[in-house]
Every structure is written in C-alpha cells, then in structure tokens.
Length: 428
Image (cartoon, rainbow, N blue to C red; front, side, top):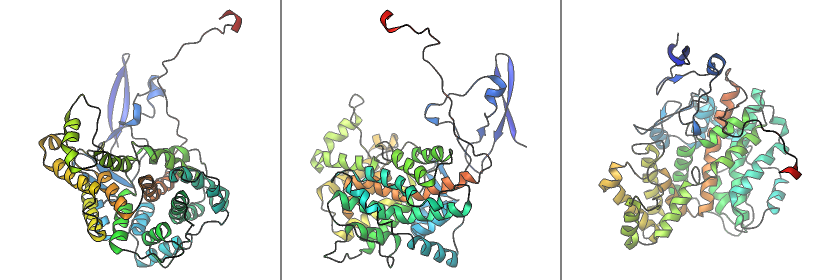
C-alpha cells in the first residue's frame, strides 16, 4: 500500500498517493489532481516531474552516481563493450556468451543500408552539417523498412531496434564522408562495432585504414558513457513522439533533433570551440578572470553539470581515455590540448572552482579526445547520437510494455487574452 500525502485547496482536502522507487526520491502521484480539485501542477522544464516510470538508468547527481540497470558506469566502461552495454540497456540483463554472439552477429548483419539511401546525400549541400543530414536520413529509414514499423508487435520492435543500432553508425559515417567530399566506405563486418565506425569514417579507397587500438578502445568508452542518461531532453522527446505510436525511425529522428542543441548534445563542441578561442596557455589567466567576474557573460564550457553537483562519474573514465589517446597519437604538445590540460589543472585546484563545484565534465574530455582522433567539431554531436541511439531505443521499447503508457499531453498555464469579440478589419 502506497503512502499518502494531502493537499488542501479552497478548504477541500485532496489525497495524493506517494510512489516509491528502488532508490532516489519518491514521487507524489498527481494523475487525479485535476479530476479531484480542478487544478493542474506548474513545472516549467519538468524539472520536478517524473513523466514515466523506468528501470533502465538511475542518476544521483549529488553523489556522482550513474547506473545502467544497476551497474556502475565506471565498471561497465572498464570491463564491458558497447554492444554488450546495448544488450543490457535494451534487455535488462548482461548477456551470456551465446546471447551476446547472437546479438552482435545480428547487428553485423544489418550494418549495410539500402543502396538508394546513398542518393539522399546527393541532395544535401556539400559541407552541410552532418547532424542536419542525420535528421533527414534516419527519419527516411521508415520508407525503406516498413516491415518492422509496427510498434505493437514485439518481434518487429526487436528487428527495428537492431536495424537502428547497426545502421546509424553507417549513416553517420556517410554524412561525415559527404560533408568532406570523400567517397562512402562500406561496412567491414570483420571489425568490431567501434573499429568498423572508425574504418567507415577514415578509410579511403586508395589506402587501407589501420586501426589504432587505443583509439578504438577510447571510442568504446565514449559510446558506453553516452549510451543513456535517464530522462534527458532527447530521450524525453523520443518518448513523447513515440507515445503517438509513430514508427520507430521517426521517434529516433526526433531524438536527433533535440540532441543537436548546444545546451544538450552540442556541449562538447562548445567546449572545444572555447579552448580554441582561448588559443594559448598564456591567455588562460585572462579568461579565468572573466569566468570569475559576475558581471561578465563569459562561461567556461565543459565545467560543471546541471545534474551532477559533485564530480561527473563519466568524466573520470573519459579523463583516463583522453590521456591514453593523446599519448598513443603523440598529440600532447598540441596547443589547444595544452590549454585544456592547464585549464583542467586550475579547475581541480582553484578554490573558486572547487567551491562552485565546477569540475571538468565529460564534454570537456570527450571534445579533446574526439578532436585528437581526427573528428571535426561538427561531428561530435553525431557521435553522441550514435551512442545515445541505444538509450533511446531502450526507453522506446520499454514504454510499449508499460501498462501506464499513454499519449503524452502536457498541460499549460494560459496567460493570454480571454474571449474577445471579433472586429471587422475596416473598424480596427
């Protein structure tokens, strides 16, 4: 039996159930509030509202905890692979050897895209942002794979889920290649998931691409760390779109739209652009002074986090991977990277940053790492989306098996004009 709380409105006592989760804050169930009182709740940004129940991901921002299905993100990044984490997020448990082989083989069998999809890219302006291409092409998959678009059929949901996990990296690599004027590279299913993505991005027909294990291992970690993050803006957008029972490709495309924003998936690009703006280690004191000045609008991007009020647990893993990549590629002397490392040192030791809990976050380290790998800043959010597609699919799949799932329809506080009389144009 749930606990209860009471709200008194206009002398009327309203009973509201309290629902408890496994860990974290309990919630007040306000589903019948309007029916019993005539009032809605008001929560701009939904920062105090649980829009669903889920057992996929849990965050404790105060303690710096991130769990995927109960597993600590640090241990998954250290011991697991991205495809194993994908299986975990979608199915709820880590796979045994046989299940993992079946799942990974199924993903490999879907890495190719329909040959006509190549024609889509020719319609985009050369040099256009790769994320703009992804929005269109991912949504267009519904025109090619209608045989797995029935969201009420569990088997079709499984097929479309695997198709998206397999094909989104191929589409992302094609968007990158098109944006820089190079020919598309077909998938190589002898390679691992991350190795294959690097191959499709950086191979050219004239030269065989050599996989650097430090780079591919770092990309595995980046993908694992970005795979899910509870009810963030893009995941909530996927759920909102999916609540109308639209085909899965359209739902995931909606997630790409939300992720593109600089306040969400574009943060690591913004962090790298800031480092380039600072330009040199000798300029850092000037920008630190600007960051501390309450009257200056300048912000140090890549520091602090809206959710994590202590150190971002993903940043610790990303920091180590970052150093390994820089060392393996011999890029520790790059001027922009020198700026980043000096800023990191200041942020971890300066009382101002410590008191305000402005620790380097995952965007700070991932931007540096991806840049060292050879990706341009406009590809950062695309790589984020490749990883987050798995989380979106997990939430998308979960909501269709949830008996509480219904068409999402937020309410509003109307502050416009009351009913008015229409005045003919010649009398206005």
